[in-house]
Image 1 (spheres, rainbow, N blue to C red):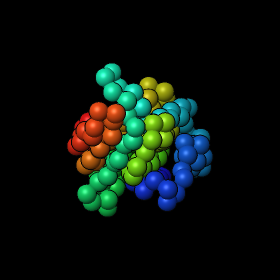
Image 2 (image 1 turned 90 degrees about the vertical axis):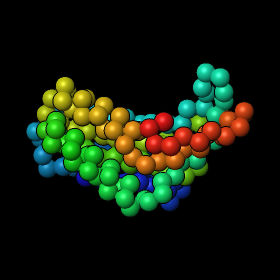
Image 3 (image 1 turned 45 degrees about the horizontal axis):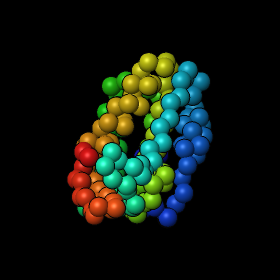
Image 4 (image 1 turned 120 degrees about the vertical axis):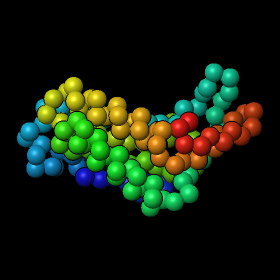
Length: 145
């Protein structure tokens, strides 16, 4: 299992890397579904263009521990076999990968639900500060945005 917060530019982990790690779990033979999600930086909002986004956390170790807690909770809740998550921090341009998640489980229903829960809980529960640099200025959004 890989659960990481990674500074952009220090490592390059791709969604296919997480897929391979999940497939290497000895319990993969119990799985009938693998779902993945790759979150990228959006460059266009309704009324503005995003030129750059800076994402940071005040305590990397604590945020990574909270991510681990979320993953453990979701594994218990849905009974899925494996979850792998990487969230990048740093400076990003539109189209850059930001958040990767892969979930493997016995059946598609609980596996898909677990992935959705990972996506939503990471977005709303982890302590990230997001600065969007737009053509109209800079917007600061704390976790949950």
